[in-house]
Amino acid sequence: MKLKHLLYVLMLGVVCLPILAQTPTPPPAEPNTVTGSALIVAARPFEETRLADLQLPPGFTIAVFAQDLGNIRMIAVREDGTIYLTRREQRDVIALFDRDGDGINDQKDPLIVASDLSFIHGITIHQDQLYLATDTHVYVADMLENGELSALAPIITDLPDGGQHPNRTLAFDADGFLYITVGSECNACMPTPETAVILRTNADGSEQVVFASGLRNTIGFGWHPMSGEMWGMDHGTDWRGDNTPPEELNRLAQGVHYGWPYCYGGQQVDVFVPADPSAMSKAEFCQTTIAPALEYQAHSAPIGMIFYTGSQFPAEYQDDALIAMRGSWNRREAVGYKIVRLRFDERGQPTAFEDFITGWLIEEGRAHFGRVAGLALLPDGSLLISEDTNGILYRVSYNG
Image (cartoon, rainbow, N blue to C red; front, side, top):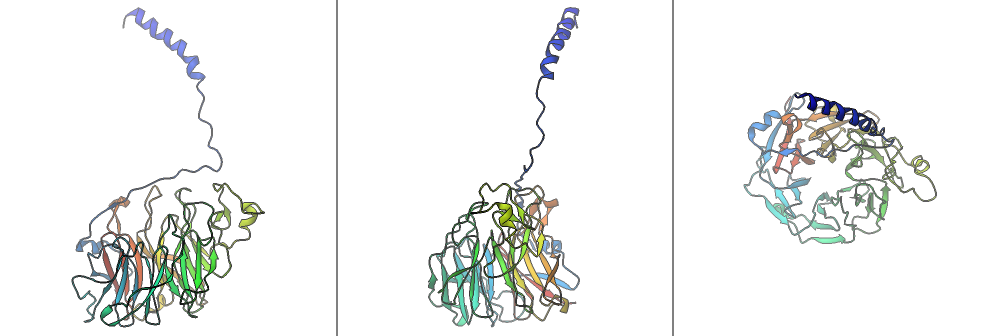
């Protein structure tokens, strides 16, 4: 380099140094800030060889009961073994059969028993009638021979449309009351009446009341067979970080508020919700709510939930719950995409979660070949699992 050029560079550096020194450093992180992530987990097609990727406890096997079923979600099984499934994208309900008892669907094409049902999701059976729920309606039909249904009769026509959470779940308690889940309209906002709740009605849809509130999106719920207590898994709010807030297992009781949107987990205040409840602060309000009995990994997205009451699985599974974790998107690393077991003690109280079936998440968490949804028991005590990405209905049996 020529001398005059070198002197020019040195002079430039001297001039620039004070300017660089004056550049402000980034401010320290503000309290109550959070970093959120959105992860696209690629969907892979199902192949029979994928069954080897699924890990189950010793003595259990998993097989394909039926495939190419479309967007199958929730499941109900009649006493005679007829299987009914809701298909949200196809806007219908289908019936499947295994009359020869070989653990495989009998017919090539499913029988469509109801159609033109926008956002069809919830399904349950009560006194040999089939109940169905869309985002705004609840219908009932008589179950006829060969899986057919009578004409659908609407018994509720004014459920809130749900906005962000249109999926309704239905179930009857031992006293014949019908319970309907209605999720929140948004991720984190002030709920409108009869959203972020569980509703209860008579079997004919009359005398509708809010049973429990402050539940962002409790899709899976049920009653413990021994204690009779009602339990449900609630979804935590998105965009609060990879591990916050947790998914919640709640003991559901009439008239109780479970905190959403103001608080989560162990009555923790959600500082990102700008408004306060009426007449008190968020911190004061959260102390009046009920904390979850157990917490689970954030963003796992619990959906289907049943209690095992069959006779095929080992005795230690009796009265435990099985839960479908649909899988995350709002997280740096994927979680969920599996079935978990929720253990209960001899008093009917929950003690711990543990993996039951894993393996749908593949390629080091970058892809999956199934997002599990609904759960149901067949008359022989085997377990059905619906998977709505590839349209696979799995059957899990115990042969130990």
